Amino acid sequence: MSATNAAATARLRAAVRITDDAMQGLPAPAKLNLFLHVVGRRADGLHELQTVFRFINLCDTLALQMRADGRIERAHGMAGLDPEQDLTVRAARALQQASGCRLGVTIAVEKHIPAGGGLGGGSSDAATVLLALNRLWRLGLTRAQLQAIGLSLGADVPVFVGGRNAFAEGIGERLDPVELPDARYLLVHPGVSVPTAAIFTDPGLTRNTPPVKIASFSGAVADEFGHNDLERVAVRRFGQVQDALAWLSELGLSTGTRPRMSGSGGCCFLPVQAGFVAPAPPSGMTAWLVEGLVEHPLFALWPE
Image (cartoon, rainbow, N blue to C red):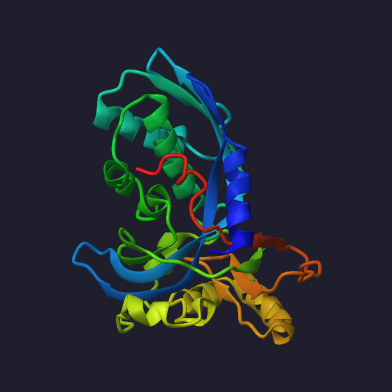
């Protein structure tokens, strides 16, 4: 286990504050897809994938306040987002319905993960709500039960509930935990929000990449394995993604690494070493130096 990545995980965990009726400082980490292969398409139109999810220390932060009146509310809604489509609210309602709980909650979210970036921010927020409310409402559901509820909200929610970096298959719900080496990344948002549906429905998307075995990934250099089938489509449709990859590629000449896009985009990342000093990104882009996490920061708090 990496001491550096373990320390980053521990710092996020230490910020959590829990009382009988409230929780504060709850981290909802972003994820990177170290590779993403589209290996087929199901009869229902969903795509069969293979990927490795890696959590990073770019996080949204949530606070939950229990209510006795059964109402579920977002303290400050996201601009332009219908409250009924808010994944944190939907997660709380799904848990309330599945458990029969009559308690409610007010949810506050401090956003840091960009929407439409391929980083799973909304899914991670929903997973943190499920994990935290299971404790706050004293429901006693298992992690597997919470993952099943999460899958009804989105294909990326189960990995965040599961709490481990993972090799994923199916639509992303079949998960095998993987141990990953210490890693740091220069992460770039290109300044454009990429709609997932537009990428997956593009007629030019490769949907027949040959499946790989988890042993093949485990025996390879994690940040050099495979590719992202969605990247070529995103680059063709969104020039800003191409610009971000080009900038990172130039930096990669000195680091000896190559950039990739995460998920359906548009955020892109470049593996870097400790001590790397990132130059200012081009106009319109936002950049972060981030660390990998050994696990979801809430995993050790609620391991079952």
